[in-house]
Amino acid sequence: LGYRFRLHSKSLPGKPDLVFPGRRKIIFVNGCFWHGHDCRRGFRAPKDNAGYWATKIIANRDRDIRTEAALRTAGWSVMTLWECETRRAGRAPLA
Image (cartoon, rainbow, N blue to C red; front, side):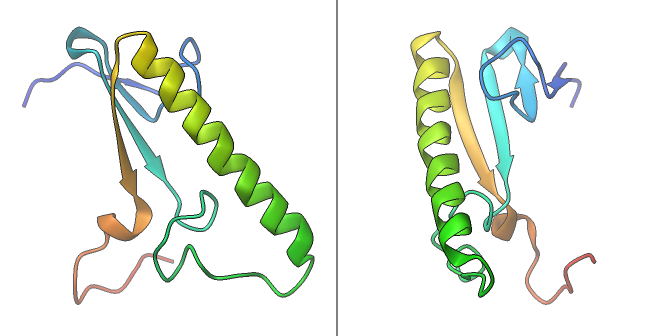
């Protein structure tokens, strides 16, 4: 469509996955497990070292909230796309 974008801009909080500077729009593509999404994959709890992972995922979610707030305060529109939303129905996930 001709939109100009940058990938993983280090100059912005959270190193957003896609940055559309001319439109002041940002897209994060989050993994459901790593960012604690409320889907089936995000609710999966590891059996080994469960305390560590629970603490890490909570910290990731807290960081995501702070990052999004900082970007919105700076005048950016922020969208989060979840891993589970990228899968088409009836298609096997990539390995």
